Image (tube, rainbow, N blue to C red; front, top):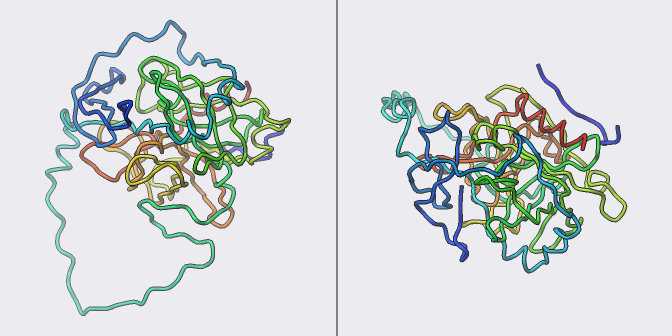
Length: 358
């Protein structure tokens, strides 16, 4: 069954040192079902041991965080946005690799491809507006609506200025942003001074800084930071008399679409080799994670800061529009240049409905 949302909207672990350098050996929270994995905060993706979850604040699962949107927007000056360090992708270490991963690692190499007479086909130039597919990571130069709906997310995490990515989506309130769960809450604490900057470029906010009045996450992420449910959302009130999607538009959303999809991922990676100043994308046919989660996987070299950026199915390169069906979430330390994003099932749909009705 497929549910899609269309219309105008009237009726989607890394820890870092204050200096910005990655710190190896740090670990975080995860669900009891995933104790075989070790989460680690490092842009360089190194292994760590699993720590017992820290005590979370006394709040019911899924309870949103509330803040003053005007104060949050005022906090983020151009200088602070440039200085924000990426809240990197969650990372799963190899130390306790599952039996499935071990089998995959020890699988025999495929038979050699039969050889024949050398044949070459000359390259051809793409049609206007068409991008390379698949794409392992590069600047998006195609324009279209995605350059306005996708943006950087800024917030304070453990008293440090940090960044992720997010996307404006079609919604009843015209004010909903989708992102990753760890981009709204991590280590049992909701982030503060949370703002969404659509179309961000080098400290500039061409369509404004949209401070959140409320941030939310799936109950599974809120309670135990389960990788399978690393989905977050924010509600941003009108700015200068306009709702978010009235100002920048909104992408569609899709749930329960299945695996092995042709998808495009976008974000603002800010860790080397990227610097957070440009919209970056990856594209390819996704696969289902066979190791520790039920997530989508895609070859992609985006780094820290891209967390929360949208994954689209049915993406139209000419218009820059699609149906959001996941977000950038995590990577395995032993699988470089591979991104994973949570499956948008019923819990992600419930979160979206909760946000759009706020």
